[in-house]
Image 1 (cartoon, one colour):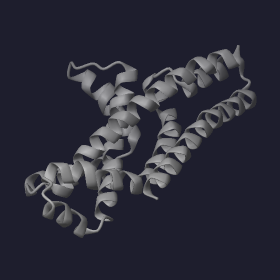
Image 2 (cartoon, one colour):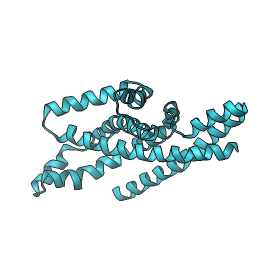
Image 3 (cartoon, rainbow, N blue to C red):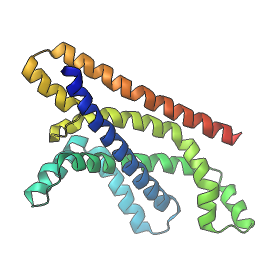
Length: 211
Protein backbone atom coordinates (compact mmCIF):
# COMPACT_ATOMS: atom_id res chain seq x y z
CA UNK A 1 0.00 0.00 0.00
CA UNK A 2 2.86 2.37 0.83
CA UNK A 3 4.69 1.74 -2.43
CA UNK A 4 1.47 1.95 -4.45
CA UNK A 5 0.69 5.39 -3.04
CA UNK A 6 4.21 6.68 -3.60
CA UNK A 7 4.28 5.36 -7.16
CA UNK A 8 1.09 7.29 -7.88
CA UNK A 9 2.89 10.40 -6.71
CA UNK A 10 5.94 9.50 -8.80
CA UNK A 11 3.89 9.83 -11.98
CA UNK A 12 2.97 13.40 -11.04
CA UNK A 13 6.58 14.14 -10.08
CA UNK A 14 7.79 13.01 -13.50
CA UNK A 15 5.10 15.01 -15.30
CA UNK A 16 5.83 18.18 -13.32
CA UNK A 17 9.58 17.77 -13.83
CA UNK A 18 9.35 17.29 -17.60
CA UNK A 19 6.81 20.07 -18.15
CA UNK A 20 8.75 22.50 -15.94
CA UNK A 21 12.00 21.58 -17.66
CA UNK A 22 10.50 22.21 -21.09
CA UNK A 23 9.16 25.59 -19.99
CA UNK A 24 12.45 26.48 -18.29
CA UNK A 25 14.64 25.64 -21.28
CA UNK A 26 12.35 27.30 -23.82
CA UNK A 27 11.99 30.48 -21.79
CA UNK A 28 15.64 30.60 -20.77
CA UNK A 29 16.85 30.13 -24.34
CA UNK A 30 14.56 32.87 -25.64
CA UNK A 31 15.64 35.29 -22.91
CA UNK A 32 19.30 34.47 -23.51
CA UNK A 33 18.95 35.16 -27.24
CA UNK A 34 17.34 38.54 -26.63
CA UNK A 35 19.85 39.44 -23.92
CA UNK A 36 22.89 38.32 -25.89
CA UNK A 37 22.02 39.50 -29.39
CA UNK A 38 19.26 42.07 -28.94
CA UNK A 39 20.09 45.78 -28.97
CA UNK A 40 17.19 47.12 -26.95
CA UNK A 41 18.57 48.26 -23.59
CA UNK A 42 15.11 48.36 -22.03
CA UNK A 43 14.60 44.67 -22.80
CA UNK A 44 18.06 43.94 -21.43
CA UNK A 45 17.18 45.68 -18.18
CA UNK A 46 13.85 43.88 -17.92
CA UNK A 47 15.46 40.50 -18.49
CA UNK A 48 18.17 41.22 -15.92
CA UNK A 49 15.52 42.31 -13.40
CA UNK A 50 13.44 39.21 -14.09
CA UNK A 51 16.40 36.90 -13.54
CA UNK A 52 17.37 38.65 -10.30
CA UNK A 53 13.84 38.47 -8.91
CA UNK A 54 13.34 34.83 -9.82
CA UNK A 55 16.72 33.72 -8.50
CA UNK A 56 16.63 35.60 -5.20
CA UNK A 57 13.10 34.92 -3.95
CA UNK A 58 12.48 31.46 -2.47
CA UNK A 59 10.75 29.06 -4.84
CA UNK A 60 8.06 28.34 -2.27
CA UNK A 61 7.16 32.02 -2.20
CA UNK A 62 6.64 32.02 -5.96
CA UNK A 63 4.42 28.95 -5.69
CA UNK A 64 2.33 30.52 -2.93
CA UNK A 65 1.86 33.67 -5.01
CA UNK A 66 0.68 31.65 -8.00
CA UNK A 67 -1.53 29.27 -6.06
CA UNK A 68 -2.90 31.32 -3.17
CA UNK A 69 -2.17 34.90 -4.24
CA UNK A 70 -3.80 34.71 -7.66
CA UNK A 71 -6.80 32.89 -6.19
CA UNK A 72 -7.36 35.80 -3.81
CA UNK A 73 -7.89 38.12 -6.79
CA UNK A 74 -10.14 35.72 -8.65
CA UNK A 75 -7.65 33.92 -10.90
CA UNK A 76 -7.41 30.34 -9.67
CA UNK A 77 -4.84 27.84 -10.87
CA UNK A 78 -5.03 24.20 -9.86
CA UNK A 79 -2.03 22.82 -8.03
CA UNK A 80 -0.25 21.05 -10.88
CA UNK A 81 -0.40 23.93 -13.41
CA UNK A 82 0.70 26.31 -10.64
CA UNK A 83 3.62 24.02 -9.82
CA UNK A 84 4.69 23.75 -13.47
CA UNK A 85 4.37 27.46 -14.06
CA UNK A 86 6.17 28.40 -10.84
CA UNK A 87 9.11 26.04 -11.33
CA UNK A 88 9.26 26.85 -15.03
CA UNK A 89 9.43 30.61 -14.49
CA UNK A 90 12.16 30.19 -11.89
CA UNK A 91 14.01 27.79 -14.17
CA UNK A 92 13.79 30.25 -17.05
CA UNK A 93 15.99 32.64 -15.07
CA UNK A 94 18.47 29.88 -14.26
CA UNK A 95 18.72 28.51 -17.79
CA UNK A 96 18.94 32.02 -19.24
CA UNK A 97 22.24 32.45 -17.42
CA UNK A 98 23.43 29.02 -18.58
CA UNK A 99 22.70 29.77 -22.23
CA UNK A 100 24.20 33.24 -21.99
CA UNK A 101 27.39 31.72 -20.60
CA UNK A 102 27.41 29.28 -23.51
CA UNK A 103 27.08 32.07 -26.08
CA UNK A 104 29.62 34.25 -24.29
CA UNK A 105 32.20 31.44 -24.37
CA UNK A 106 32.21 31.34 -28.17
CA UNK A 107 34.94 33.23 -30.06
CA UNK A 108 33.58 36.46 -31.53
CA UNK A 109 35.43 35.72 -34.74
CA UNK A 110 33.00 32.94 -35.60
CA UNK A 111 30.10 35.34 -36.12
CA UNK A 112 32.32 37.68 -38.11
CA UNK A 113 33.47 34.81 -40.32
CA UNK A 114 29.87 33.70 -40.88
CA UNK A 115 28.88 37.20 -41.95
CA UNK A 116 31.91 37.34 -44.25
CA UNK A 117 30.75 34.27 -46.19
CA UNK A 118 27.26 35.69 -46.58
CA UNK A 119 25.23 34.15 -43.77
CA UNK A 120 22.45 36.29 -42.31
CA UNK A 121 22.43 37.06 -38.57
CA UNK A 122 19.51 34.63 -38.15
CA UNK A 123 21.30 31.74 -39.91
CA UNK A 124 24.50 32.54 -38.04
CA UNK A 125 22.74 32.25 -34.68
CA UNK A 126 20.74 29.14 -35.61
CA UNK A 127 23.33 27.18 -37.58
CA UNK A 128 26.67 28.28 -36.13
CA UNK A 129 26.35 29.70 -32.64
CA UNK A 130 23.41 27.90 -31.05
CA UNK A 131 24.67 24.29 -31.51
CA UNK A 132 28.00 25.22 -29.92
CA UNK A 133 26.39 27.15 -27.08
CA UNK A 134 24.09 24.20 -26.39
CA UNK A 135 27.09 21.88 -26.22
CA UNK A 136 28.80 24.15 -23.70
CA UNK A 137 25.66 24.60 -21.59
CA UNK A 138 24.59 20.95 -21.63
CA UNK A 139 26.48 19.76 -18.51
CA UNK A 140 25.08 22.62 -16.45
CA UNK A 141 21.61 22.04 -17.91
CA UNK A 142 21.89 18.42 -16.86
CA UNK A 143 22.73 19.40 -13.30
CA UNK A 144 19.78 21.78 -13.33
CA UNK A 145 17.43 19.03 -14.55
CA UNK A 146 18.40 16.74 -11.69
CA UNK A 147 18.02 19.59 -9.21
CA UNK A 148 14.59 20.38 -10.66
CA UNK A 149 13.50 16.79 -10.11
CA UNK A 150 14.44 17.10 -6.44
CA UNK A 151 12.87 20.55 -6.15
CA UNK A 152 9.47 19.15 -7.12
CA UNK A 153 9.23 17.93 -3.53
CA UNK A 154 8.25 21.45 -2.45
CA UNK A 155 5.12 21.54 -4.61
CA UNK A 156 3.37 19.35 -2.05
CA UNK A 157 3.01 22.62 -0.12
CA UNK A 158 0.36 23.71 -2.65
CA UNK A 159 -1.34 20.29 -2.59
CA UNK A 160 0.17 18.95 -5.81
CA UNK A 161 -0.18 15.16 -5.43
CA UNK A 162 3.46 14.23 -6.01
CA UNK A 163 5.70 11.90 -4.01
CA UNK A 164 6.10 14.00 -0.87
CA UNK A 165 2.37 14.77 -0.78
CA UNK A 166 1.55 11.08 -0.62
CA UNK A 167 4.44 10.45 1.80
CA UNK A 168 3.11 12.95 4.31
CA UNK A 169 -0.39 11.53 4.03
CA UNK A 170 0.93 8.01 4.60
CA UNK A 171 2.99 9.08 7.60
CA UNK A 172 -0.06 10.74 9.13
CA UNK A 173 -2.19 7.63 8.69
CA UNK A 174 0.34 4.88 9.44
CA UNK A 175 3.09 6.55 11.54
CA UNK A 176 5.71 4.46 9.70
CA UNK A 177 7.95 7.47 9.31
CA UNK A 178 11.30 5.77 8.78
CA UNK A 179 9.99 3.22 6.29
CA UNK A 180 8.04 5.75 4.25
CA UNK A 181 10.73 8.41 3.97
CA UNK A 182 13.40 5.79 3.27
CA UNK A 183 11.23 4.54 0.42
CA UNK A 184 10.85 8.11 -0.78
CA UNK A 185 14.64 8.53 -0.85
CA UNK A 186 15.06 5.35 -2.88
CA UNK A 187 12.30 6.42 -5.26
CA UNK A 188 13.88 9.82 -5.92
CA UNK A 189 17.20 8.09 -6.54
CA UNK A 190 15.52 5.68 -8.96
CA UNK A 191 14.11 8.65 -10.88
CA UNK A 192 17.32 10.70 -10.82
CA UNK A 193 19.71 7.99 -12.05
CA UNK A 194 18.07 7.43 -15.46
CA UNK A 195 17.92 11.19 -15.93
CA UNK A 196 21.64 11.48 -15.17
CA UNK A 197 22.44 8.63 -17.58
CA UNK A 198 20.37 10.24 -20.33
CA UNK A 199 22.23 13.51 -19.85
CA UNK A 200 25.59 11.78 -20.01
CA UNK A 201 24.56 10.07 -23.24
CA UNK A 202 23.67 13.46 -24.72
CA UNK A 203 27.01 14.88 -23.60
CA UNK A 204 28.80 11.95 -25.23
CA UNK A 205 26.83 12.39 -28.44
CA UNK A 206 27.58 16.11 -28.60
CA UNK A 207 31.21 15.37 -27.85
CA UNK A 208 31.39 13.01 -30.84
CA UNK A 209 29.77 15.61 -33.07
CA UNK A 210 32.40 18.09 -31.96
CA UNK A 211 35.22 15.81 -32.96
